[in-house]
Length: 153
Image (cartoon, rainbow, N blue to C red):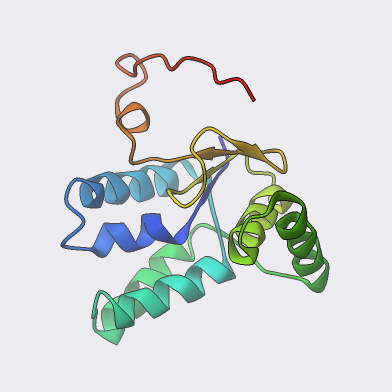
C-alpha cells in the first residue's frame, strides 16, 4: 500500500528522547524502504533537515546520510499547481497550509494513506486516509489490533 511519510516519522527515528516512538518510526521507515511503498516530498526533506540540525542537533554528515537514505523513497516535488491545490484544500478544510501541501503531495503521488500524528487519525482528507502510526492500534500487529467503533461524521 502506497504510504506517504510525514516529517514527524523521520524525526522520531533519530530522536533519542522520543521514547517508544523512536523504534516504531525506525521500523516503519525500514519496512517502507524494504517493500518500496513509501513516498515523501521535498517539503518533508526540507523540514527533516531543519529539525535534525536545529532540534536534534545531528551533525551535518549524519543529516546528509539520512537524506541519502530517504531519497530512496519516491520523492514528490511541489509544482505551482500543487501549491494552488493545497491552498484550496487549506481554505476548504481549515487545515494548515503546510498540512494541506503534505496531503496534496500524497494525493498527487497516488498514496492511499499519509502516516502522521499531525492530523486527525482515521480521517479521510482529499481522498487520503490519515493514519497515526504511533497509536496503540496502528502499532499493534493486525491480528492484535483492537477493533475501533465507527465514528459518525
